Every structure is written in structure tokens, then in C-alpha cells.
Amino acid sequence: MSQPTILLTPGPTPVPEVTRKVMAEPIFHHRTPKYRKIFGDASERLKKVFLTKNPVYTFAGSGSLAMEAALVNFHSAGDKVLVVENGKFAERFTLIAKAFGLNAISLKVPYGEAPQPKLIEEALQKDPDIKAVCVQLCETSTAVLSDIKAIGEIVAKTNALLIVDAISGLGADRLETDNWHVDLVVSGSQKALMLPPGLAFLSVSEKARSRMAAAKLPKFYYDLKYYEKSLKDSDTPWTPALTLVIGLQKSLDLIEQEGIENVFKRCAANATFTRESLQKMGLKLFSKAASSTVTAAWLPEGIDGEKLCEVMRDEKGIAMAGGQGDQMKGKVVRICHMGAITKQDIEKGLKVLGETLKEMKSSSGSSCCCSCK
Ligand SMILES: *Cc1c(COP(=O)(O)O)cnc(C)c1O
Image (cartoon, rainbow, N blue to C red; front, side, top):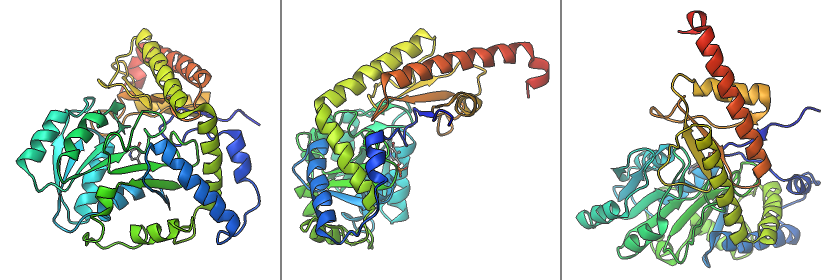
């Protein structure tokens, strides 16, 4: 069998063998004490990764489902929400809000820069009607880390809820949900949580919960009132993605064995290593606020980033992500250091990146007349 591709992409990330093994066991029925024990246990232990005492709900779906659930369960048509837009995933909050008839106000932040808490404060003062502030922990498209602690202090003084998309960042970049006054934390299984895609998570503060009853947007599948009732019995209202929940228990074992603080430290050390190595290769970093989840770097002038990622993936077994969106597509490369990605994986990836860049540079130089468009 050929070597599997090394995934350095921002989801899916590698799934450890111990986790893959438990997920390969024969299936059983979910309306059983056996399943409720597993789900109840996982739901409790997830709180230690979210650093919260509040409930964490698990949905079958990708992370975006929990982004939608975080907006829809707490709002009514026409409600104003402030979306801090500093990348492609932030823009998704705006798309969801608009799809449900919310009044989305965009606070535009240049790609590569972290949101300035001061500007969020000013926006909230100017518009006391704002019901929620949406922001990413790590904006995966730009590799920018937001200062959630500072933003949390500001939002906590208002009636607005703070919604943090930590789909990629949770379990890689520090997020102290309760201490930092974050009302709703969204995450997903396929990034730092070392699982295949298919689970979405949402933690809900008391401040958020108290708004649920008055929120009138239509919803059913992810209506939290059903999930709240079921979770009391360690259950879900609809059929859970039980194979993934069994895997989740294993992931939580791995995180607990290492210790969440050590996980943060390891991701931070691998992130530093990645940034320093890229700079040694002569590449300029894209993000001005480094994240432990993912690093993005500008590619040299004349290099087609899409082609670069394709060659590395198809010919050399290294999957990295290219850029997303107008300013970044084809021009940047993104390398992750979250989840089960090891320093060895990153070293191998960087070596292949260096080699491939050299090959592409020399071929574009010598055969310019026939290959240039
Ligand atoms: C990956 C990602 C998403 C999208 O999650 P899906 O699981 O693909 O729905 C949203 N936000 C951030 C920050 C992400 O990294």
C-alpha cells in the first residue's frame, strides 16, 4: 500500500490510529444505556476542552451547522448582529445572518489583521441595539488569531451575546470560554479534535440561554430546546452520528492524557517552528496575529499557488491548503499544526514545499516562452 497523504490542511486533519480502530467496531443501537453512557461521558468531558461549566451540545453535521444554530436559536427576524469580518469564515456568519433575515452589520477588518477590540466597543456604543457579536477565534483563511479575551470583556458589559467560531481553533489556540465571557462557542470534529468530519458542537452560556424562549426565527433540526431536554438523559433528539461520538471519546482520552495545557503548548511550539522555517525559506507571513492552529505565507511572485498545492498533493503526498478569496487565492499557502499533526509531519511538508518551489521557479524561468500564458 502506498503511504497515505500527510494532511497539513485545515480540516480534515489526521485521525490517530487508536481512534480509527474504535470507530471500526461493529455498530450498535443508539437508544441504549450503552450509548447514553458514552454520549453522556463525552458531553461532560467536552466541557474541559471548551473550558466551560455550561452545556456543550453535539449535532450531526459540519461546523457550519453549529454556526447557523448559534445565530438562529437566539434571534428574531430583523435583529441586528455585528459580524467582525476578517476572512472567508467570518463572511459566512454574514451569509447565514442574511439568509435568516437578520440585520447583519459588517465590521470590515483587512485580511491578515486581527480585529481591534476598540472598534468593536465603538460599534456597540454607537448601536446599543446590537444583539450579538460574531467573531472567529482563528480565522482559518488568513491564519489570524483574535483577542477573544479583550473582546469578551467589552461584550460582557452590554446586552449582546458573544459568538465565537472556534471550529478550527478549539483545542489548539487557547480559548477560556467562561473566564473570557464567551456566550456561544462553535466547533467541529475535523480540525483540532482529531476526528473525521461530521460532528458540530455548541456551548451555551446562561446569558444566551435566557434569550432562547423569545427568539422567533424558524428552526427545527438544531432547535436547542430539543437538545436541552435530551441532554438531561445523556441523549440526542435525533439519531446521533454515533460512530463519530465513539471516536470523540477516544479523542478526549488523548487530550486528557496529554493535558489541555500541554496540547496548547505543543501547537504553539509547532506553530513557531513553522513560521520560523517559512521565514528562513524567504517567505513572508500573511498573518499579523499568529495562531497556533494554522500558518499562512505569501508565495513568491510568479508561483501559482493552486498548482503548487496540486503538485505537492498528487505527486509528493503532502496536502497543504492554498488561499481562499480574491486576495489570497493562488497566492498563499497554509500549513496547520493543530490536532494530531506532528512536528515530523510539518518538517516533511516544509521540505517538500521548499523542493517544489525550487522546481517551479526553475521551470518557469527556463521554459518561459512555451509555458507562460
Ligand atoms: C473549517 C471552518 C469552518 C467551516 O466548517 P465546516 O465544518 O466546513 O462547516 C468555519 N469556520 C472556521 C474558522 C473554520 O476553520
